[in-house]
Image (tube, rainbow over all chains, first blue to last red; front, side, top):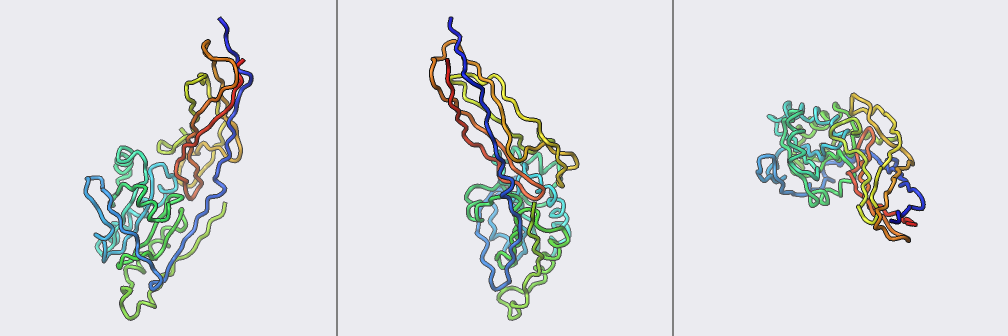
Length: 193
Length: 96
């Protein structure tokens, strides 16, 4: 019987796209803020959660995934913020973009004892928040439901995040007469690699 | 695994027709210490090659053929990760 031979061996060349990653922070003054897109997502108990449920609170909205190593740096910070500020009208929402859904998320949440509400994201929410090209992407949303700042990647440290939250918690609402003095003083830390 | 249970290692897979992928060979990875992990992570950077040895079954017809496969990978650095991607891979083979 004839045994076919292959003329040559093959390799697949791969060029990683790591070099194009960029990180950074975008902040907006109170009067220039835009409304955070509304969403309707499920939490681990199957309960539907809307962003608008949190109107009146300062929200730290963190898009993350179990496969995102750098997200692990921030999660303990956000757990601490949840504990420290929840009684002052603050909440952390973690939106996981894991394709494998709760099967991947639940063990991770349990292992890390995550104390804030975790939601399962989808393509729709990803698109409405600008595509989420990289994770983590974290937004600080003011009490009016407007985006105060966007942080792509681990763009700033724990204390800077905390200061930004404290400032938002203390800020008057946009409709108040002194709103123009309520601008955030977030630091910008553009990354390089 | 790249050194962390939750990270997604690069993987090249091939369809079973018209040839069979007998062995996929990955290059030696670099061990890098990234800020999010206490242990070094196995990574590839820059340009690298993944080799495959194909086996032709006796029924394979001589001539030009295509092998289709998929490459799944995840790219990260110290600060952020791109979402995992699966890309189509295709090579042309001359079966003699």
